[in-house]
Image (cartoon, rainbow, N blue to C red):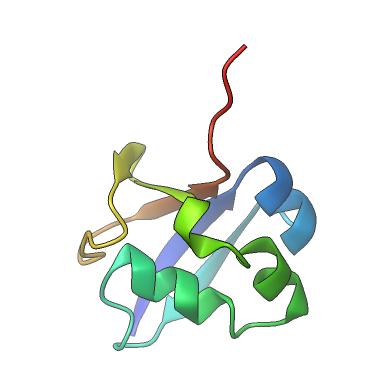
Length: 86
């Protein structure tokens, strides 16, 4: 199991009910996509926040990544909704 700092932004933060947390991830969580699926199992608030996981943006150590990106060695993971222009 690896420990990782998670940071949530905008409506993801509002729906989960916290801005950040540190979680121990099971060995089965290998990619950003695996993380999103895992988080949805942690409770209704996570399931609601990540209901449309394909639109959730992910950043590892402050760099945007694809959902297929491996988590190994990452210290901080940020999750946020799509950006809007304006």
